[in-house]
Figure 1 (tube, rainbow, N blue to C red):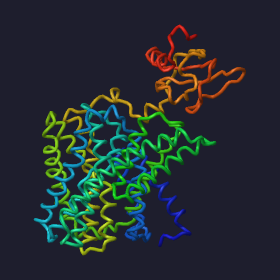
Figure 2 (tube, one colour; figure 1 turned 45 degrees about the vertical axis):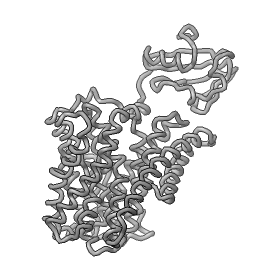
Figure 3 (spheres, rainbow, N blue to C red; figure 1 turned 90 degrees about the horizontal axis):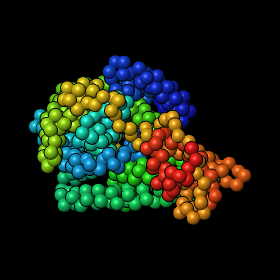
Figure 4 (spheres, one colour; figure 1 turned 30 degrees about the horizontal axis):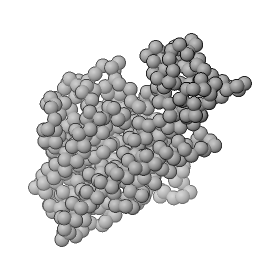
Amino acid sequence: MSISSENILLIGSVLLLISILVGKTSYKFGVPTLIFFLGVGMLAGSDGLGIQFDNSAAAQFVGIVSLNFILFSGGLDTNWHSIKPVLAQGITLSTLGVLITAFSLGIFFWWISDFTIYESLLLGSIVSSTDAAAVFSVLRSKSLALKYKLRSTLELESGSNDPMAYVLTIAFLGLVVNPEMSYGSLVLVFFRQMILGGVLGLGFGWISKYSINKINLDFEGLYPVLVIALMFITFSFTDFMGGNGFLAVYLCAVYLGNQELIHKRTILKLYDGIAWLMQIVLFLTLGLLVNPTDMIPYVGLGLAASLFLIFLARPIAVFISLIPFKMKARRRWYISWVGLRGAVPIVFATYPLIAGIDKAHAIFNLVFFISVTSVVLQGTTLTKMADWLRVLLPSSAKPKSVIDSFLNETAKTKLIEVLVEPTNEIVGKKILDLGFPKNASIAMIKRRDQYLTAQGNTVIEQNDQLVVLAEDDDALKDVYDALKTNPDSFEE
């Protein structure tokens, strides 16, 4: 059966439904959900039910779109206060760590195979980064509570190391196609990609915040659509300018996730759902693209490369990268173990296919085998390894993420009312500019003879009567500060 415009919706929706139902019970068997999504795609492919899909360019496009949503969602859920203490560690792992992983695996594979040195380094580059989709999905679905801010380190690394792997992949693909290419030009490409990606990502983050809060849209549902448009503009413009679009999208989302936004709850809910949808679509697509029988000749090489990557290349890269930081060995070992490979390497493996190099299909099948092995072996043992290395916290001590905190509908035990005096400095300000605590909310505003629903873009006027709900007394203290008044002005 071939995928066509007439049946793509039927085939896609059926596969999506099967993936969700199968994924619902996946953890009963201890296997990460993403592997089931991938398995459904493989079973439906040419070696299974016979659905023919061999369009590498289409798979790459689906991969790029999906990664935009996955990285953006991960960025929105990244708390700046959580990653700030581990920022240097995360950046070192996502740059130097990726470089060491790529070269060590590349040299090893050159030694055991008939690949040229550039082809081997290309393979090493493609699988050199940890996969954001796999790490975000596995850590969050398992609800791992880790000591020493390890979770922040791991999510920061996985969200920010794809740009380095992408640059290395493009660089060594260029050397495979044209071995005479200047090394100096590759260094310039690297710095241009990283610097422009970082600057434009933060710049578009500021522009996006301003646009969201200043453009008054008539319908709340349009705000997530606006954010989607801004996300793709960030990626495509950065890519057009020669920067790294993936880095820009991630940094833009990190900036936005730590700002006050109009209808932020709606935006976060949408992206949380879309991120899951994109993970399913991405893994289904890649599962359809691969033919399991084509991987059989590469099982030996793939297993050797996978074991070397998991037990040698990744630990070497982590231990060397973290030399400047004071950290116990068991923490370094756990970071080494969460080196999950997943969809990103498989997406990067489509670049050699489209370029048409001699070893393109061999590289794709090897990368696919390595990624599956990594997710199955490492993804199923994250909790056990955390417990064994004594870095696991009780689930009750798990800190809330940005989305968990923002969307959590906890009971409010305090209700207060305050009259906004004409001399109060909050008069004329929007609610989103008040710095209102997240564990309290303005439930209603009485303005003259009308009752208004408080929204982020609602402007406070003099003599407004604010009805405020708060979780506890500590939240009330923050409310006092936000409303620039004292407790005597409130009526409980």
